Image (cartoon, rainbow, N blue to C red; front, side, top):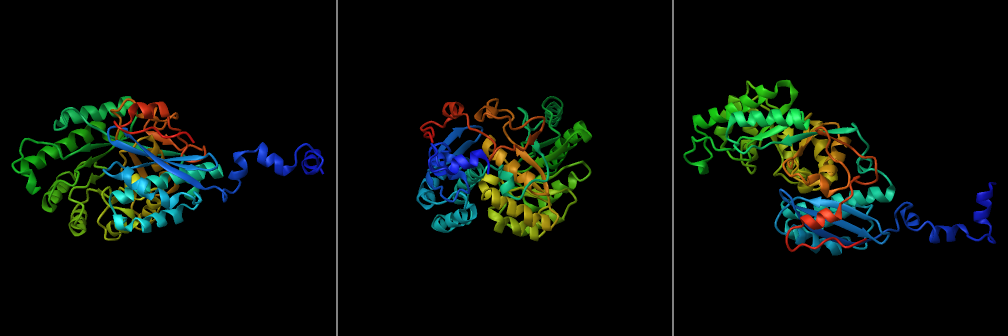
Length: 412
């Protein structure tokens, strides 16, 4: 028997093991297994980024705090406040149970889709950060481990003259050469000068030629240095989407995103099956139940869920698992702050069929300042090994960039 062991178990020693745990180990005693930790509070603060990011923090009686993020949307903070009584007093490690509990409790507010699912997503992401800290594991480990150390990031690009094909090509080259990205996306729902009536969703021949010219100029400029996707933002009719997809088949298009409105899955399926141009959809679908229909019906070549909107980290993992059964890759849509961006990276490293995670804020020069760590470097995210998400809010930056009228998080 070693000396240290004997001293710790000697009733006459200055400290017994129980006293040592209570008086000197502090929070660590509660962290062993985590079954005696309870949630004490949930708070939100909205940051005025290129979108209004809703940051979420879940507090515990052990002094450990988890940080998450919900997709922006009117009423999300109020919905999270409404959900607080359903999680306070619960164990934060029971992520699946708490998620289903919130879905059931919020059914009257429409927890099938929409902002209610988005609000639940923010809490769910924070629970993964919190559980990882309690168990001293990176969040990806809670999702089954990892397939890769780095996650590819695709940069959503913009120019002052978005309708100018040559300007788009110039910006593509700059982002590749100067910023180090090898994956890009440009918008195609931009004015061409040929529009007559945008309400009818019909593309005139001149509009098709203009959009095809953007695709041609950008893909020819970057060639094999980068993959390039193009976004339509649900703008066109079925027949116009088919003609557009056919017109760009000869170019090296990574994918054509959301060419038709999201509601009619039959039209979406017809468009996807009409062309060899890969079609990406999923940003405006909620939970695995809706994304599954896209995948199983062959209505999508690449599924694009938005993690802090679709249901959170485990729900995104479920979507990726369904997609993998149909050999469909996942490219996560993302307009978030560094918090949900890193959450997406943890999911992307834990699933085999991840293509990339979107970055939508390259023109926002303080995006990186919101957390203490570096998130994106040379067009990729190195998935951290620190417990939880592996990012730490810089509360000074949060306070400086809050939406007017918001209050800063309270201290743990």
